[in-house]
Amino acid sequence: YVGPLVETHVHEKPLSIALREINEGLLTIENLEPTA
Image (cartoon, rainbow, N blue to C red):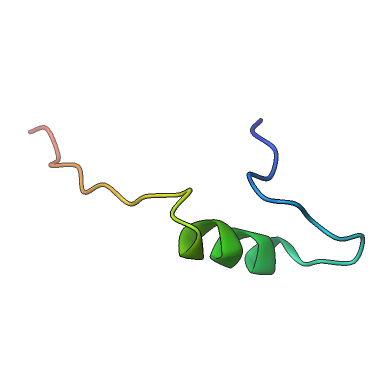
């Protein structure tokens, strides 16, 4: 388990937290090629 990477508020929804993490450059997306 990895907790939020940004400060959160009591009633903040997980999607809102994740979007803020992406906007602040704390989360990245990497494409992985499937192994055959």
